[in-house]
Length: 294
Image (cartoon, one colour):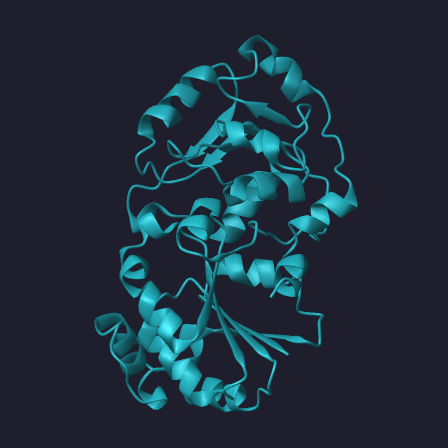
């Protein structure tokens, strides 16, 4: 049995739709099964240890106690040792605890301080970042997505669509705006919490666009979710990530690389239909493959 403990977010609800028909996988949105004081303790004392009842909710504790030797727990995006220590206390000693990191160590200050503590607790560390896998002796898995979405034909309203906070890439975003000035584009660049849209709204914008824009920060090597969203929904991709050529799904008919491909052929690129990607390649990036790798 595999228990996935994840943030209570629309994105995770969408992703987990891909495994909800599996009998060997159960999922728990962490905060939905915790009371307010437990959330406060995890927030204020990330590196201190408390009784499990102070840290995680009763229902989750009861479920975890049912796990048997060899079963696995996968925690996503919660790097606090206080949580993982509590999980260790309520599970069989031979239950395997895993932490999935979807952020580089250098951008996650609490993780940088907590790696040694997590290892002392007995947590196996997994990352999407190849550099972190090498530098911190972590287990590497590529980024994943729900690759089994049901596609419905939608009349495109936009040529290009971008969603993302500026976060040290304002110049790259502006260069892209200049490049696409003659096209019908939708840009959503949240500057505050009130500006963010829901993930469901994001998916609706993807469906109504011909091409998804992916702008990565300088020196970022691994892909974001944007290429996988485009791949899953059979949309073209415009990206400044030159490393995307190294991925199995790369196809110059589907992916235009800013600064590499000739901008004079951008209109031709946009006008040609998306070329389907082999199912065996899609499977490499599907959430089921990610789960099975643990």
